[in-house]
Length: 256
Image (cartoon, helix red, strand yellow):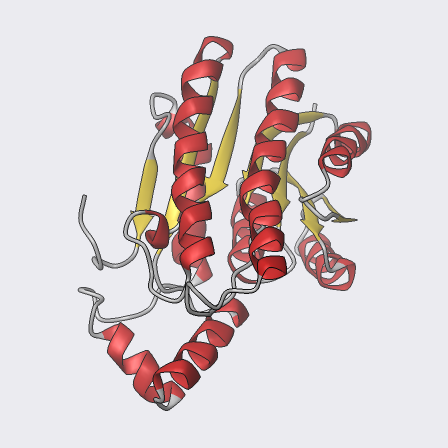
């Protein structure tokens, strides 16, 4: 039976990198993204490389749609093996000036979307009766809060908490739940963060990037592939005994 990985937010950036990496491990890939055009492009690229893949449009903030996605994927490919809650949004603004609609949308996507993804995946794994892997996108900002990203930091701290709580409850079903905590990863989302942060601080974008780079011990930003390698490991038999953990992928910006 084909084993499948569902990856939310897989139309670009880190999610896209995860999709390509898990395809190398011979999983069928469900490329889920709110932007169906982007998801379809990734799925087509995967199929050209010989992988089984299909694109799905999904707003993770809609619980019913998340559950529907799992059902659709199972009908298409068979057994679910991995669910990656990668989808996320952010905005840059001061704490006191943050727009309520921006805050609500961020929490709906990042926090509630991850909650619904854990629920939907866990119920499917329980039905299958053979365990499974749930892997969540936390962040360095969920280890040490970022200025100008109050709601984002709050959501990522919360995701680490969800990861631990779910790991404790689902261990009896042989379901592991872990998270990855990226630092500075060069993606379109990071480009937008740098541009807005630089504008607020009165810096050029290049100066903003330089100031952040100085905080990275290894002296370079991460790539989506760097993060995808950690997800690949968490998905592998080598991580059978790992659950409830959040792994920093930040090149040495912070230490736990």
